[in-house]
Image 1 (tube, rainbow, N blue to C red):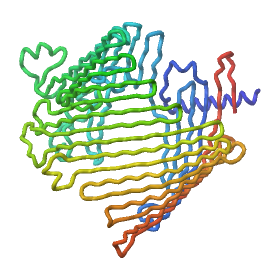
Image 2 (cartoon, helix red, strand yellow):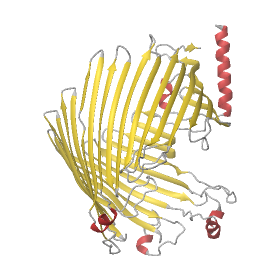
Image 3 (spheres, rainbow, N blue to C red):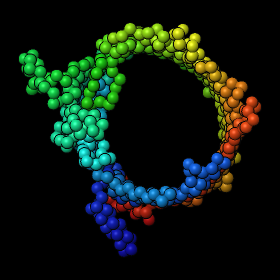
Image 4 (cartoon, helix red, strand yellow):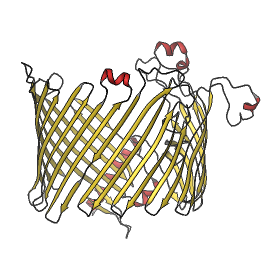
Length: 591
């Protein structure tokens, strides 16, 4: 007992030194009571690779050696990872970086501290913030608010030749309030974000300096977004959902304020400048559900230059209108289909307008628990029209793409073995409807691909066998491509406890371009893995590939071979573990 006490005291002393020198990692405080008081785990290992090619070793070294070690200290769920990595005379050492992130909850309340995320409308805010937030989630009422840093500053020394492009620190705050339940609800959102103009050196603002270094002027920006999202439903048959937002955005907060009374009356909320824009985004969906049939009509619009500083990049200057449907018949047959039309250039300022039409149809049939069939069709039509300029017919984009897929599969299994066979076939066409470009460049492309695979599992023997064949053929741009691939493999678990795994895969690939270029590649991969006492893992792998040029119209044939072998070892350990006991206060110590 005294010896165990000294070991425990030494362990806590070591952890105390580490905590004094290395900040702790991220942790949710609500999980502390459920976490083990102390857990020290790690792993050490090595990986050694040999590579040889008949083409020589000008671009890679024949031998590659790696040694690694990692140690993770978990104290009531606070994780502190350390790692050491050595590879080909390169050494790296990583230690925990400070990150204080907690989200404790009490009844319907949640507190956010550190780098956290809070659910908002996707048009308003979907980025993590580093700060503080509070959220309440009731049965029919909810609200939340946050304040924090949305983006850190990049303020390298301007005199450093390798200095990164500057970036302002961005600070924001937001709030949301909502009413209702999952069937009928209405939520409102607000976001205010602004760049800190003093967060980078004043040298970065000098135009001559930026021009000399080829850096774009880093304009400071600000943004205010107001949004709403809701759902109105009539029992389970009809529902209307909507998500809308308006963004007021200034691309340069140093630009002059607009000296007009109708704008200045709002200066306490947002100062309108000559660089300011007001844009709108939103979507609506009308849904119908009757028995096993469901359909929806959908509309979406994102105006040109719409942007929220609290949201990741989104495509703007588009609108779309479409419908989707799904029908389940006899609990075995599923039919689905969709149609959508999308167009850009909403302000008619782009040179050209592009419209796209997407349409799909699919069917899936399940016959018992063994046989399943599926068939799908996907179509896309893209056309260009006049915009700010009149498009020339000789360069107009006018394409139609279609694909048809059919993939049946059959599987059978019992306690001793399993069979699985699957077949796939796909035909795709990409047709240029512009006669000026298709006739000259032969831009139509047709592709046919098919394949079949079979797998056999012998459960009692611990053996798996597989074989597969695939064919692909493509014609377009004046060329005819063809590829045939055949592969076969097997794996087996040896020893009484199945700790020795051996697998072998062989493949052959034939490629042909017209009749002038043919080649065959042969390859094989061998893998052996052995696990000792659940903590020692030894593995060996080898791969050999041989490429042969069998071009019958050339006097000189080119070919090469490559061999790769790898020997690896990994040892995972638990240095110390103090487990939490739910029934009693005493800790269980495991060495």
